Structures are given as C-alpha cells and as structure tokens.
Length: 390
Image (cartoon, rainbow, N blue to C red; front, side, top):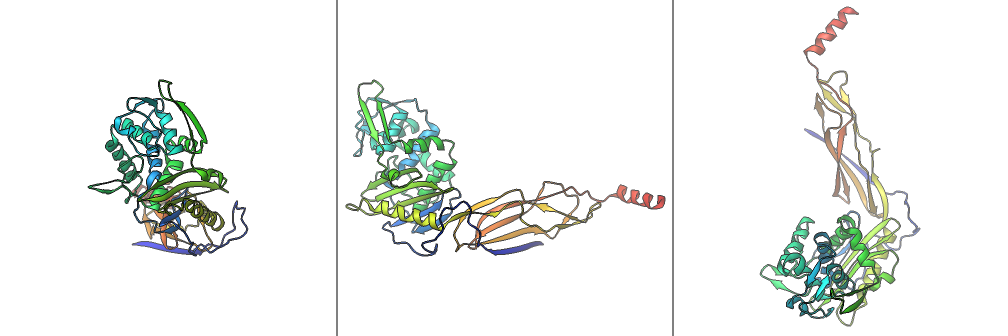
C-alpha cells in the first residue's frame, strides 16, 4: 500500500528579480473588461492567471493567421515560388491585390499576411503548402490536436467567418493564447516567427519584378508597451475585434488573448483590455522557485537488502512558476512503504506532485540514490565463515 504524504505550504516568499514594490489589486479581484472572452496566461507554462469566459468558443478573425504563419514556417521553404490562383486573388478586404497567374516568393507573402493581414496572401500561402485551402486547414487542425486543444476548429487560413458540417471556424481565448505560446516558445521556428511579428516594414516585388510592394506592421501595440514579442489583430462581423499578443518583462512572459472585444466604433477597446490584463499580471505575479533538488525526502525501508535496510532518495528537477500572494502551493509525495531488494541507483521509485490552489500543476520523478543488492545464500555463507574466523 502506498504512503501518501501531503505537505501544504503557504507561499509567502521573497520576490526574486522583480522591480515592482507594490501590488495594486488582489489576484482574486475581478477586472472590468470589454471583451466577451479574455485570458492572461503564463507564457512559460500556459497556466491561466486570469480569465473571463476563457473556455467559450468564439470566432477569432485574423488572429487565425498566427497558426497559418507557424504552419507555413514549419512546412514551407521561404524561397518557394507561389502561383496565385483565381480563388486566392478574389479574397475580400483586407488584400494585397495579387492577380491570378502571378508568382511570389513564399517569404514575401508571409510578410504581407502578418504585417498587413492580407487575406489573399493567406490563401495563396495555404494553397501552396496544403495543396488547397481544405488540405491546409487539415494541417492547422492537426497542429491544434497536437497541442492538446479541444475547442479549436480551423476552416480558413485567414480567419474569415466560415462554417461547414463540422461547425464554425472558432477557438477559445485560452486556446488562442496557447497557440501563441507554442509559436513563441515551443516551435522549432519560434525565432523566425518572432522576427516576422516584430518587423515594422518590408518591401518586395512579385517574382517577375514588375510589381513592387511595401507592407507596414499594423500591430499598433508594438509602440504601446515595451517588451512586445509578437501580436496579431483581427476583425470580422461575427468575431468583433480580437487580439492576441505576448510581452516579456522582468524575466516574465505574459500572453493575452481577447475575443469579441467590441464592434465598430470601439476599435480601441482591445488596447485597453490588453494593457489592463498585462499590467495586472506584471504587478501581481512574480516568478518563484517552488521546487528544486533540495526538496526534503524521507528514506524508505528496504526488505532483504545487503548491508542497508533503508535507501535515500532524490529529485533531479526544479520548477519556477509565476505566483501571486493569493496562490497556495502544496505537495503530494507518492512512495511505497517499503522496497524489496534489489534496488538500483537512478531508478524511478515515486513522484512528487505540485498543486497550485488544490489543482495539480506538475509532477516530478523521485529516484533511488544508491544500489542495494538482495541477500542470497552466498551472502549468508560468507557471514557464517566470517563469524567463525573472528
């Protein structure tokens, strides 16, 4: 039968690497937000720090394009030549104005799509990489499944309102934020993603060199707050104004996602909500070490072991997490009451689970610190001989 030892610690720790000396509001207070759905997550762990209907599925407009971009970066070659189809050329505003039969470098269309949110460029990219829009949507949905997203469904690469027999093109604020986390933290193409999102202006021509273009970054939030890593705006009639962004400050990365943040003429609501959520996060949450290799573990008895009747244990991890002063941290240690020899150094023998506010956050392995062999006839024979020779 396993022994379960629960340590509950009230986390009032010294703030580390934090420039703030005050907290404006309790982390449990509600914020007044315009958005129908909003979320603030820890960009390192994906933990929700604040949410408002963050699990409700809604249209996402052009914030879709962060998924289109990461798929294009991971599966495309930036020097590929893209042929423009009739379908791509007929996409509604906002558009670059590409024409059927023209050719463009994939990289150039990517900048067009991300900096000015051109819908025709997004479709041309999708058709080139996925064969057609449906094939590319399958790639987007497969990536969403790989990320563990359960309420996100892509139909278009540009985020225009759409539905089919499986449902509407949609996501949740939480899952949109987790897509951004993947793009800036976990994807093998994260550096390229960030570089594109931070580019202010980009010039290019079609492949023939006959048409010239300059696109400028429409993410105004780049100039509203220091440390903006990436961001994407969006608007459709169904979605309203939407926004997703990541900001880094004081060794903390926060991600905000907003859905349904007003309709015309309320274009600035998204900036107000974003600032409010980010300021709340930076002022209330500090990165703290809540688990490391010094975590105290009791030794466990060993039955039928040579020399030693108990063995020491250790952990080989550390865990830093953004916490507020309202958060409660507890630990659950799961180990057998006794081990049967032999036991081998380095073998996994149990786990420590870290709970935040009674919700499991992360599990760590416990390892055996030394070898203990099992007693056998040779061992008893040698003991008898040693006894008579003494």
